[in-house]
Amino acid sequence: MKEIAKQAFGVGLTAARLGMAERMARRVRDDKSIDGDMAAFVAADILDGAILRKFDADTRTRRVADGVIDHLSEIRVAAEVAKKYPETRGIIGVLAVRAAIVGG
Image (cartoon, rainbow, N blue to C red):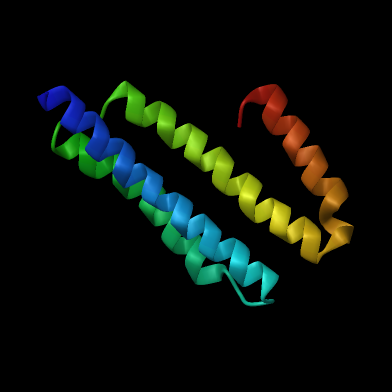
């Protein structure tokens, strides 16, 4: 049971970044800056793992979830950027293909 609780807490902490990505996407849609949001997202991405490692609560499941959440967040924000600024679709497509090929 303790292992399940550790997994759930770690994945939940990491998954909170999805809400941050949604906020960034909405701000792009509303033509608002995402500079501060992006900085907070990167800090949260670094800190969630660091905090969990400090308390010996990081797990392989959480690390996999971290990568998935990173990609989902990038996709969500990039989709909104592509809708708002059609001229970015080409480079976003190139970056997507690159990510699919090299995994990041």
